Image 1 (cartoon, helix red, strand yellow):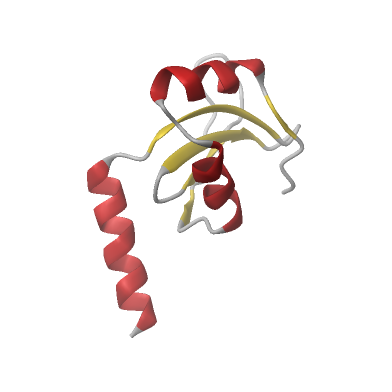
Image 2 (cartoon, rainbow, N blue to C red):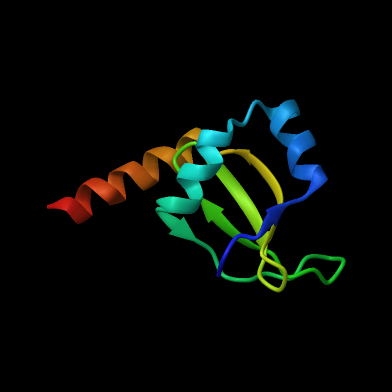
Length: 88
């Protein structure tokens, strides 16, 4: 799945949630975790891309990042532990 663009909502969320462009780029280029497509209450089909610093919701039909937020510290710790285990 290619990321084609970001929604205006993402730009607003980035500013409000202090998510850096570099964090989004890292999540796209080096995603430790990609979730399955899960339909929300409005019938939209996003899937999550979890990076070490940012988590994104992407519409698989359009390739648009629809929202983002900082990756939770517990999730980051879990991902780092899994990455460390996979190196060994």
